[in-house]
Each structure stands twice: as structure tokens, then as C-alpha cells.
Figure 1 (cartoon, rainbow, N blue to C red):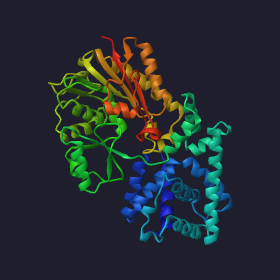
Figure 2 (figure 1 turned 45 degrees about the horizontal axis):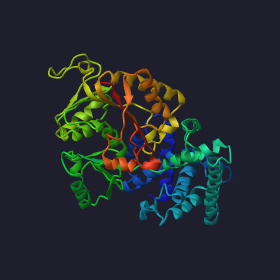
Figure 3 (figure 1 turned 90 degrees about the vertical axis):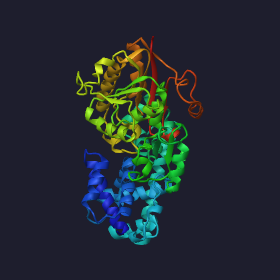
Figure 4 (figure 1 turned 45 degrees about the vertical axis):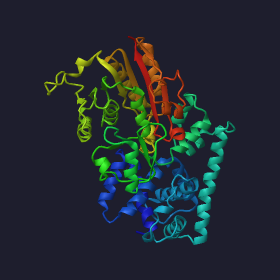
Length: 478
């Protein structure tokens, strides 16, 4: 497929996702299934281009609106979206958040991205090659002007928050939320620009099945480029996107896909082998599986969720990993179908530790799911915060005297993080903050710079390279 046609398809998918309330991932999958003539290499290029465009939507849409005034395209329902996708190719390559030269194929009819952009402009805007070069320069100059204003705002030399929001590719109200959390504008800009890029894929080695060193060796034998994680002892980071579904270590449960930041949540609990643990919002069970491995499958882990159907995947994954310490319990029912399994209410005041990985906005995962930030509104946050407070309060009832309570989210918003914990501690004087310093392994403490009195941790893509996470450790008075 020629490059101009690829841009046309990218524009179509970009517009489709922006107008829909469905997830970008499901819409992209559905789109590609409906167009079987698009080959795997074309799909890879289109997927990366469209998702890079979605992550930087406010920026490229602003540029599109301005460029269209001077350079209207031939009649098309996707004029703005075509310019937006071309802008991603130009700015993304210059700023190194969408480097796609390696994706160019001979079948695209060009030897470089620049040549492909010129060909597209010649075909869709009826420009000469010289005029196309000027068009590209205009995009670069417009981006540069916006960047200068944003830099001045970050340094306190300008008060144009609207332009700052455009360059940050973040709704203004979220920028203001960051500011209210005492984050300075330079840090906000650095954080938001780090969200331009696609996220890395984290792997957790199942230490019960294989050592990290052996897993690395097998992955290298299969030509999978990867490195050791910086913070979590069982973490491996993939350096390129790889389909793991048919990879032997993934198929037999020796490795799991789990962001390194997510692994640090389980590590914050630091369970002893014989502890009874309640994973109150277990979902697909990534942290449940990690906890079982940390306990060498010798403890008792009760996994539940508001939506019990979400635990189906955990059942499959625990079976695959041959774990016997995990028990699924419905949150709603007062009795269990399995007569040997006690109802959830039985465990009130009886758990050594409770993990609350609370439902949240997911703002820490916007590199993977960029439409989250564009669809989110303040009223949504308020509803989620109320739900989080209620969940944490109910989950705390299961912690026995002297036991540990962990609260965590994959959000960057203080309303969902520190504010929730602070409110909970004020209303529950029998719980106190508990230091992470004595929970984490020494190498993790050193890598993260954890202090002896530090009881919570915020992870940022801009600083740690992980998804955005928050975790707080508390203890119930004995």
C-alpha cells in the first residue's frame, strides 16, 4: 500500500476513534478486521501512527486548523485528520516520540518518511515538491512557536495556559489539577511530554517457575531484545514490541505481562510466607499472582472484585501457573458455592494484609490508552473518588489488628491518591502510615531513593519510565 493511501487510512481510523466512546484498542482491531487487504506491516505502521496522534491530539488538531486555512486539501471528509497524521510524522520524528523510519517498507512507494509526506501532499493537496517542502517547514515553525510559549509559561515568563495545555497535550483542567498538587510547571511540562511516547512492555518473571537470569537467556535465544528492570527484582523490560502469545515462557506461566510500576505495588505489601492476604480489587489478578509467588505459594490469598466476572482470567492464570494458594470469593454473596470456601464476610478482622488496587481514572496509563485523558471530565473524577473512599473503608474492615493495608491506583491525580489516604486516616484513627523503607528490597530502596519515614510512593513516566502509579502503606494498630 502506497504511503498516501496509508495516511488516508490513518486519518479515517483517527477520526473514527475520536468520535466514538468505545476503546481505541477495540475500534482499531475492528477496523483492521474489516479491511483484510491491509497487511501486517501496514497495520503496524498505522497502529503506531494513529496512537501517537491520539496521544498528541490537541497539538496536531491545533496545527491542522491553522494549516488548512492556507493549504486546503482536495475534497475529502478527512482533511483535518490527514494533516493531523502528517503532522505527527513530522513533529514526532523531530521530537523523537514517533520515529517511524524503521517502519517504512518498499511497498509504501517511498524510501523515507519525508519522501512519503511529500508524495502525500503532491497527491492530496496538489502541491509541487518545492511547495510541499514549504508546507513541512510551516508545520515545524508553528510547532516551534507553540513550544517557545510553553517553555516561557513553564519558566513563569508567560501566562498563556491555553497554549501550555496544547503543547502538554492535556486538558486544561487536568493541568490545573497538577498545579494544585504543588507540581511546578516545568515538572508538568516534562511529565506531559513523556506521555507523548508509547509505553514499554514490562514482564514479571514467575520466580516459582524460573529465575530471572534463565528467563533472560531464553528470551535472548528467541531474539527478543530486553533489559533488566531498574526497581522490581523480577522485572524485565522489552525493548521492542513482541507478540508473546506463542512464546513458551508466557504460555506455561513462567512470565507474565506486568508493568514494573505495578510490581512495586505488590512489593509494598512485603508479605510473610504464611500470611492471609485479601486482594480486594483483584481484577485480572496480576498482583494476586505476584503475591502468591512472593509467598512461594505457601500462604492464603483471597481474591475478590466488585465485578466477580473479572476474576475469570485470574482463575485461568493461576491454573496455568499451578498456584494453589489463591481462592476466588464473590464480594456480593453471603455464602459460597464451594462448601469448603467461606464467604467473604468470614474474613473481617482476620487478614494479615489487605491490598486495595482501587478502580481509578487510569490517568497513569494514558500512553497505552490515550483517549482516557480526552474523555475524562471533573464530574467523572468526583464519582470515582467517592467510590474509592467507599472501597477503602470497606476493605479496611478485613485487616486484623497489627495488619497491613495497601492503597494503590494507576492514576496521576492527587484527588485519587494522597487525598484519599489522608481522608481515610483522619476518619480511621486506628490506622497509621507505615514506612515503605522496611517493606521494599534494599536495591529497590536505593534505586527509588526511599527514605526511612516514607509511607507512600508516586511513580511518573517522566522520572521512572513506568506507568503512573501511587501506593500507600498503612498499618492497623494492634
